[in-house]
Image 1 (tube, rainbow, N blue to C red):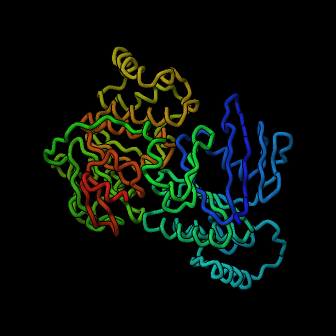
Image 2 (tube, rainbow, N blue to C red):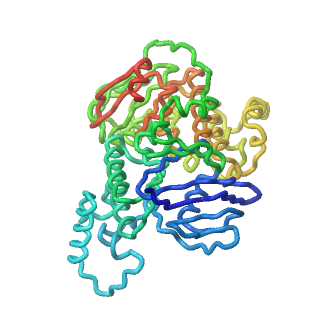
Image 3 (cartoon, rainbow, N blue to C red):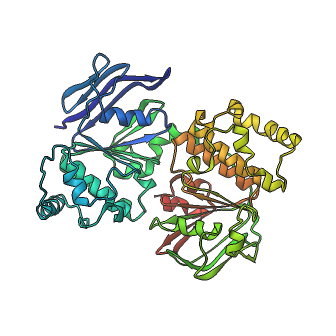
Length: 481
């Protein structure tokens, strides 16, 4: 008989006059992997926070391990035995694995530490739990998979019976993710519950025993094992699909060429990108994005091979002024890197336009024309004086609108769908489509193809710094399966 570990019964949570969790009913059983697919980001952080800590709620009741731990009448803020593994590390970088596992553990009272004893205890504990990590390493030397495995081991040692894994496809490579999922299945089989949150239902369906569809602070549907199919979820996501079709591509000579490029982790990478085409590079090792950015923005040079832009050699000198050369970049965390928090929407939108126009001041008539053009798209956000007040979707839209104003020849997008809820990601896809319609060539690097296949014309699999497979659009259905 299944044992219920967590239950949220008619939970409501309001903040700032907004209802973030709305009559939420949710349960997780011991020894199961519960998947969670979020249609909207609303309530996402609050749900995770409320599972971990018994913070005040507006109404409802929360049970953990058979006991009422939180209700509308009493919330003591105590922590439940829950551990969250996410993109942000919860380990102390400068210390060893052993120190993070034992010495920093709550309740550790020893004043004189026998490092050899702790090393042996850590090694034995990891072996017993099937966790294979070099425990002599310091945390800052761990790769992404090793860091996640160490955090998993730490969670087990702390006695956590529920582990939340938040979008691992965003920070683990295509090689690392299956290995981490294997470990999650093992801890599931040992009676630990896992809440697995994923960006895409296909990723979640592959590992989950059940999957909940989360939207606007509610669980709208729970898919049992035999219901976790594309056909079953289609009615719930059909309305999100963008039915606009891109025009046929003009396959004239390529805009951007990588000719057997060697640099950093690139080991002879070769591809061609055409005008108005979207090419996705699936980075199996999660290593090539920085190298490609360095080459295209002047941070590094080819050790061997060459890059050409419009058939002219793209030298480091040209790359250093990449914006003037018609190359635009949207990094993985664009809000943090590309927006000015305390400036107005229009100041952010027209930033860099002076370089495009070749003048230090933007004439009033051009400024007004831009405002008139984007007011219908941005809505009330266009009058915002502090972009920190905007939603993530509005901030991301602002970034892509700025790029579209520049009309670049090439747009590089690093994991464009790694942030935001489903609705935000749908908006990003539509914005990339608009850039393609303008004739911009779009290069996407990602560790998880998921929804990017919808806008891609070609997919290349990059492993060991070189292309190992290539697919055209008609073959994408087979890849997705």
